[in-house]
Image 1 (tube, rainbow, N blue to C red):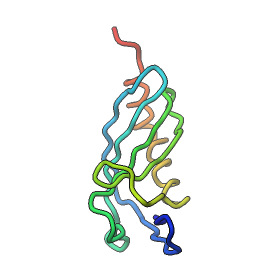
Image 2 (image 1 turned 45 degrees about the vertical axis):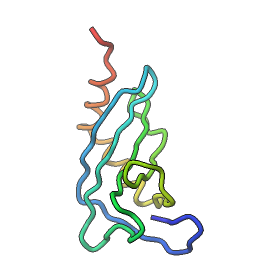
Image 3 (image 1 turned 135 degrees about the vertical axis):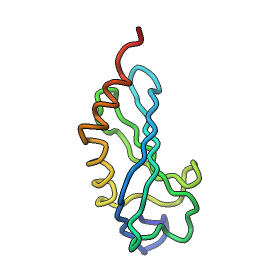
Length: 107
């Protein structure tokens, strides 16, 4: 994690992800991702409840990965490695299948 205005970088490792998927409209799927951190990479002290919002197309392509603290925008951004860990999870067969199922037309 990189805090805006700071030169300190926290490199988080994630042990597990707990997704909640919601289809926003005909174009976007929002994935609220609860993050389980490795014990040796705790969240920055300035965060309380760190999660991620992953915005995908209905086809499962990631458009944006945003860190949230207590469900709101925060003063941190993910590093490239952290985004890669999250992207690998979102691109897994299990999550891609869940996005595809959610994206099917109602009926």
